[in-house]
Length: 51
Image (cartoon, rainbow, N blue to C red; front, top):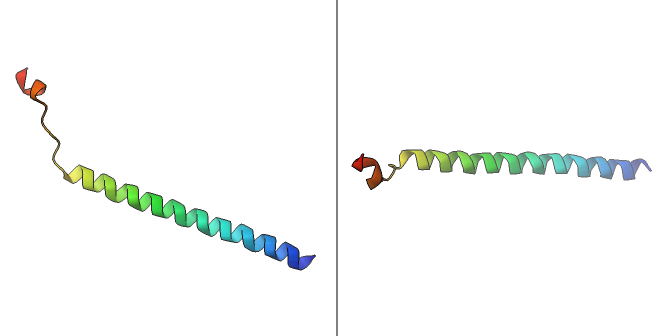
């Protein structure tokens, strides 16, 4: 029975590691995308220049 509990504990630890890895990956991708978007110049709207 202890071996079965050990494998369940291993599965829980693996799920934790995968969750953290996914979270870090999503954070890194969104961070770099927002930095890339901020560095790009915003297009000018011709309606803003009319007023």
